[in-house]
Length: 281
Image 1: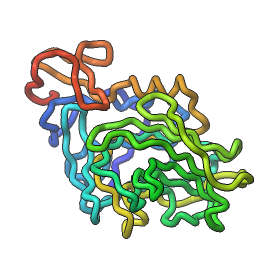
Image 2: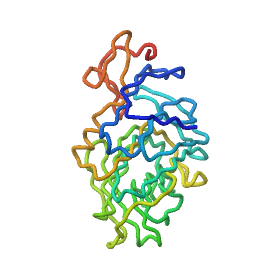
Image 3: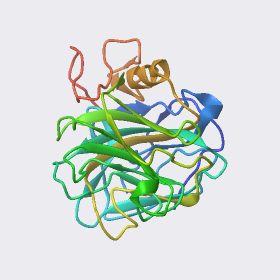
């Protein structure tokens, strides 16, 4: 079951299923109409997320556990069988940007996936995000079908495991480029694949989280934020997204928002302030 939002909405408090940390979720979309789809993983039953806009028709999950820490809510994936899937239509877009807040349990070279649009690396006009790339890198790849010679990949050094990190992958089939950002900043990367990667639009597939097609290459970790945007985000856009908290904390009667002393950071830390008490009302 999936509960889409009918419009861009203001911050919303938790209902019956309140997280232990006591938060209010910011449901506004920072880039407005450029948002293709947005998911905040804030339902602890893990049966659906409570935020979506045009382009996403629903989400299903299997074996996922919803939880919350002092950075906000997230879904946990066990790395062996749990996954989520989202039917998503991107065939109107030749360039998209993917924003992801991800906690990865441990690195290897077994190609366990964080995201794959499609269910095969040979899917035409698709893409995937592979923290466990066989080269020992963190890989973002666009695929055009027909084998590896029609792929375009960006490989960069892996950040620390067992920690929250903010990623943005800019996938541009017009300029035939893949550009990654890590924790709000451009990151040095190596490009590989065809020098004549075909232009055109993305395909019409299902977006899988933490698996290939829900049957293989299961990723172990947590996801707390996923947004897809139309077009190419620039460095200023990415930095603004990184600096924008999507949770606000309630301490007694005081609600401290983005300009206050307390805000969630990707490393899980909070600025000096009293302990969190209670749940958001």
